[in-house]
Each structure stands twice: as structure tokens, then as C-alpha cells.
Image 1: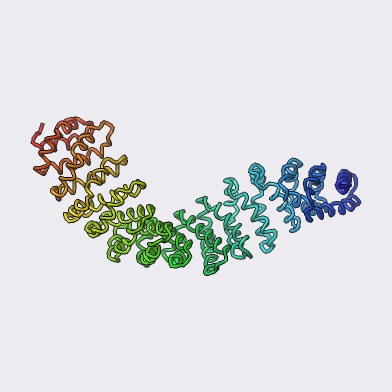
Image 2: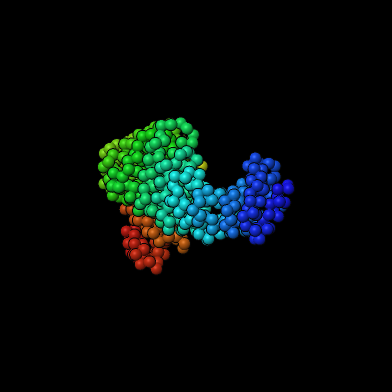
Length: 560
């Protein structure tokens, strides 16, 4: 290519001449640019291999009137991945950076494109850019020229490529970038621009500092407004924007302060929009709405307020829509929201009065383990500390029959565990003879005994306490299952296990004490020589445990 030869020679003479050389350079530069713009085969590689790159760097370093044209040339060359490394080696990034302070918008555009393309997918170079202070310059350019769409686009793409880096996030936090991005989101001319901004917000939103900054700068409200404007359409790009934006709002609500600001005591714009998502026909918005409610329901005052404002019927209606062949994720999220809302004691009473337990029982027919697991956890939370709810559910034969099936779920340990925990909770919180009898009749006692041998201490304790309560209330309903499962032998092993948890030994003693009050079971305690195991415990280093063992020995007729 003779143009390259003439360009190389002219550039070498640059330090000697001024205006004449610039005139001589102009035509060859235009020729090369034309070749690149016309996408002539291997033009970029030929230019890079010609040895002209250091000379181009010299033009940029000298701030020649031709710098703008050279920056454009470099930007077009750098579309080709093969020339990016040679551009870096020739020092082009270093000499381009100062031009980001130019007042010429065309120069800024060409420079931004050149740097962005050269450093694309090069983490080392991107880190160098951040260290050299490129973040404040990019944000400043967007602030200075907010209406220059091509220039704004270049800066946003650059920020998007850098936003995953911790150093870039720190720099952006100092720049008040939230307001800039919010303004650009509101005026985004197309889906492509929206997606770039959403991607930046998503990457930055992982930082708790920026979550709060975003909330204070109105980012969630801007996202919510954007979703409102796009709802009802079928354009795939718009639907994609809705999905990204709604997911982002859910993510921003993970920060306590940002969540509380969005809630606004139940009158916040974002909270109000989230309620409307629950009633949307868009499954993605339904999912995000349920997840957002679960995030809002992270403290008691919010939970009580949301119940006052009538959120529960919306969640129940949503769940009922998805019972048969519905979306598992929506059901899972809806149940998470209900579970969180049921944590405050006052809410449990009101939710029972509102018929929540009756309505969510429709989900019992679900054959999806994630839904089963979450439903069981929600029901357990409903009865926690709430006698009436435990009584209502504990006497429900249909519910108990389904729970028995799930207690035997071979392929899902979580469902199996949650089923047994619900049975234990029904007995512990109701302390009712009717419930004990119903659980025994449904063949639930053996599952509680099996739960007592769990590897999780909390589950062992829940099982042992529920068995002790059940034994004290209705030993006749329990004794057959106790014999079949060899419960007493298991209790002996628990007491004698040198590695057993102290709290488990306490719970085991509580059950043995309950059994010792029954003449039938007292005989069986003697037959397995339970006194021997109790005697060993009387010398335990834990004085309370030893004292309880002595007390039970006395009740068994041996005070030694």
C-alpha cells in the first residue's frame, strides 16, 4: 500500500515541518480511513504491520490539528482484535487518554471509541485506565454533553466494561454516578441504551454503599417508571428491559436502608408499583413483585404495615393462579413473602382470621419439591407460637395425609425434613390431645422418632420435645409406635453418646421423664435398664444435666 509508505515518511518528518507536513498527511490519512470504513480486507492489519503506529502516537502526543482524524483512524483500526495489542505496544492508549479532556466533542467521541475498542476484554488495560483516572473523565463528559447521544453512548459502554471492577465501583461511588445514570435512563432513545445503563446499574448495585446512593438518587423510582412505560407491550426488547429492571429493584431492596427508603411506610412509589406487579399478567413482574414483598417483609413494623395495607390477598390470588402447571418460581417467591409476613405474632392471628391457611392449602396438590418445601416452611411459621393455628392445621386430616407422603420423599431431603418439623411444630404449639391423636392416627409418630436421630441438633430437639409433650398428653396413642421404633434403646444411646450435644441429652431426659410418669412405659424403661444410663449421667460435668438425671432416677424408684 503506497499510501502507508507516504504516510510513514510524512510522519517521520513531522518534527521538522509543521503546516506543510499536516497538508501532506491529510490525504494519506483520508485514504487509509476510507479503506477502513469500506472494510477492505485486512486494511487494519496492514496499517498496524507497516510500522506506522508509533508515528500515529507521535501525532496524538503533539496535539496536532490532525489528532482528531488520527484518533478516528485508530478507532476504526481497533475494531479488529488482531491490531489491539500492537496499538497498546505502540503507546496509543497512553497518548489518547489526555484527549479525554478535550473541549472538542468530535475529538472526545473518536478518543472514547479508540480507547474503548483497544482495551475491550483486556482486564489489565482496563485496570490501568481506572488507575489513570478515566472514571471521573467519563462521568464528566456525560454530565457536560448529556444530549450528545453518540458521545454519551461511548462513555456508557466504557463504564459498562469497567463496572465489574472493584476499583471502578469505588471511583464511581465518589462521582455521584447514580444521578447521571438516572437522567440518561429517563431519556434513553432505545432498548440498546436502556440495557447498557441497566447493566451498569446491576454491576454497581452489588455494593451496599451504592445501593443507598441509588435509593437516595431516585434510581428505583426511575426503574419503576420505566417498567410502567413499557408494560402491556409484546416487544421482546421491552420485555427484556422489564425483566432486568424488576430484578434490579429486587436486588436494591436487599440493602436495609435502601429497602426502607423504597417502602416509605407503605406509601413509597416503588412499593405501590410492586403491589401492581403482583396483579400483572407478566410472569416476570409477578415473580419480582413477590420477591420484592419478601424483601420488604424483613422487619416486624413493615410486616404489620403491609398486612394493614392488604397485601396478603394479592399474594394468595397470585399463588392460586399458579397452583396447576403454574410457575414454580412465582409460587416459591409468593410463599417466601407469606412466610416473612407471618413472623410477627400479631400477624399470625390476623392471617389465620383472614383464612390464609385455608387458601394456601390448595398448594398441597403441588408435585414440585421446591414449592412443597417452601409451603411446609410457611405453614410451620404460621403455627410458631400460635396455638389456634396449630390446632386448626393439626386436626386437618387431608393436610396430615399429604404431610405423611412428603415425610417419605426419597429424592428431596429438604421436603422430608420440613414435613417432620411441621408435625413436631403442630404438637409443640397446640399441646392438644386432638392433635396428638390425629398425628398418631396418620402414622406420624414414627417420622418424629426418625427426626430425633437427625444430624441437625435443632431438629433432634424439636422432635424430642414434641414426643415428650405428646407422651404427657396421650401415651396410649404413642406407645405402639415407640415399641415398633425401639425408642427406648435409641434414648439410651443418646444419653451414653460421649459426643452427643448437651441440649439433645436434656431433651432426651425430658422425654424419659414424661415416659416415667406412665406405669406401662415405666416398666419398659426398667426392662432396657435405663437406670444404668441415668446413673452415669449423675456424675456429668454439667450440673443441671446431672441434677435432672438424679430427679428421674428418683421417679423410677431409685434415689441413689
